[in-house]
Length: 403
Image 1 (cartoon, helix red, strand yellow):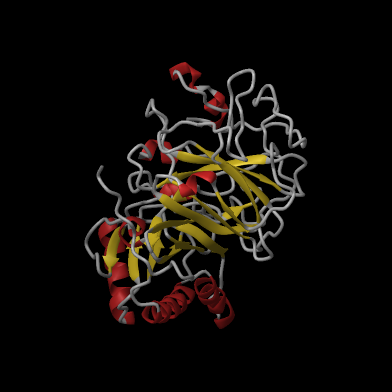
Image 2 (cartoon, rainbow, N blue to C red):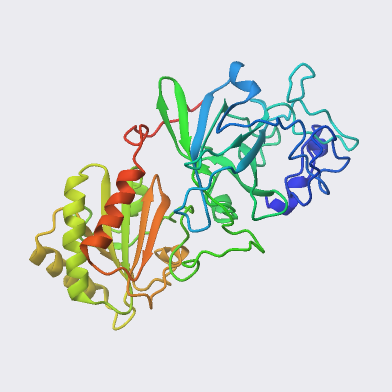
């Protein structure tokens, strides 16, 4: 459902739904707005002291226990943002914004029947930009028209008013189909959560990029729209031809098959510099061997000039064999605007010398454009992989129960 229409009430189906098209906010924490469309209740009952970790009132109740955690970054997607307030609210396990008078965070219904319920809270990021929210997995609305989700808003100094981010949604939700994913706004980056499990707790990581896809944001990311989707967004699945590597002779999606841990997509378009390409492939082969089992690297060639599938495949086969590559896969598409492979969704500029998208759990954690093959630049990539590895990284993907 588009953000404009998320203010439609569940009164239409007999239950109260709230608006999340946030416009202006009252900082009076004890006053409840009469109309959430005009003044959403970001500050209602907000404590004066906030920490980087919060536990929702539902966590002690029946339901699937989850931890939502990650780092908030500035617009560059690389600099941690401290002292940022995140506000969340959600339905209960039945998909209802339920109220409980005896709960401290309870929000009664206003004159229009709107409420965020009592399963709500705030966190303030620490010096490293980190946050953690312990809660229960919400249920989908009873009408089953939207995937289950947790609403999220942010207050930062650069913006006078808080603004909404993409909801937390869940990768294994059958209601989160391809059509809905393609319509996501990606405000603050992708909100798609992919769970791991530790000690019975489902853990989902989401990094947030302040200002990303936010209209009239006072700062801009210098790499925005020059080539490739932004840091914080998901890599979009696509199916290149595999000329050399484990999937040789097939059209296989690198992200779908190998996207759970780390991945590097090295795109080269209409201006290949084969001397530099060879240098990069050797460096990436070395890195892949060190990260064996937790990193897959794909060279994606998309030169539009004189494209012929058989010639392109033979060209890359010869390159891979001559370099004796064992880890790096060599793939190609007719062009970066090609719709049959769906590579065009990743917004690669064919005129850029190269574009590197580095991803973890299918989410882009770093990006470089026109990167020269040097030890210094190689260290940048290695360091990003090292610093983004945590206690949850090597855990396998959780398979959701069919019931």
